[in-house]
Length: 252
Length: 268
Image 1 (cartoon, each protein chain N blue to C red):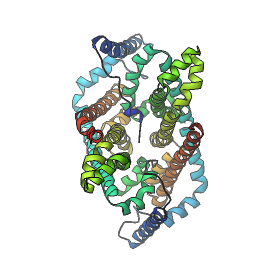
Image 2 (image 1 turned 120 degrees about the vertical axis):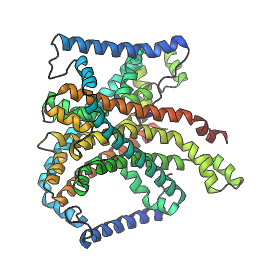
Image 3 (image 1 turned 60 degrees about the vertical axis):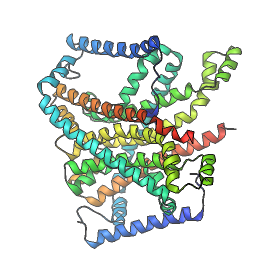
């Protein structure tokens, strides 16, 4: 399904979105749903503007944890993938374990991490890094080993070194695969950071949502939750835009 | 929606090769467990940091009833939500494929939905519905719904023009096209999404239990962590991991069994 810009493909979604917002607002005012549960979109925007400084500061904490974690996890994943390509024995021993580890609900060991690392930013960054690490490892390895046999032979006949092979052939071949992992980690690192704040934290959007929830400040919960979604969407959008630029430049 | 989990495990070849594929990871795991056991035994690894493997194993035999109670709850939430979300996601994808009006209207929202962290809404849903089974199953279902919906929608709409033309010239009905071409060719993407969602379902269930429940393995992990009952905590973590692996294994098995149907798309 190619994104063609036929007018109905723009107008229909916009109409739908506006209708949805109006219906939501009407539902919130009709009294059919308790005010303790549902806040209208206008009320949510007002709450968001009113709490702007509080929301902004806590969003910054959450975003910082997510970004630092994603950076560490992705770099580590790429480095291990490069090791995999060069040392076959290491790969054969560790790769099945890595796939196994990916299936393990890592976030569940967060209580352990809080025991080990305290309740500051460190455990959140660790979980975000862990969640970013495995997708990058698996995807980057697949990309790095996705080298045309003829190109490999050509470089061999030029007696290229392993590092030349890595930089001139393997890395460019791996770029599309790495973006797949980066897009995954854009969302998952944000989720990890948010969820990790539920357990033991005094800062962050995840903490804020639970804190508001305990005092039944419904419009405030909605504004914090929607802000988290917007940040997550923004991260994903930026990554996707970088992907489009990088791929359009590399492909002839 | 491709993911690392869609990566294929190495194919097992002849006997010596099979040994070569299985032996290194097994040796590594055994070595790690021995190292863990040894360092816990000599006190190198303090008990509050990581209890010995014997202690964790002992937990499985001494407190199996407790573990089973919590595990049953988590399994019910994760599997129920997974099934619900996968069915709804598949239904939504079929609907949008067969009704172009709906597709044009909803496609941008469908695309944006994959970047939305549904789990953030847990506190809201708990405020709405109270603590317990229903909110958790709902959140797991939502978390499963989006990847499955998107993967199947994309799979159903990525079509080979030649084959479509062939079926058109045979004047096939839209349903025949769906059944013979669209569905089989979308199954690889669907299974990739199901594998991602399978571990996602358990993660979501475990995490949601932190604030949305007072039973389940996620709750057990959190509470035993707060009381420094580390053996219990690790036993709960291992149980959750085993259940996740079991579900993943089941999906991989079904994918293998359906291989014949999937290849239909290339045979037509």
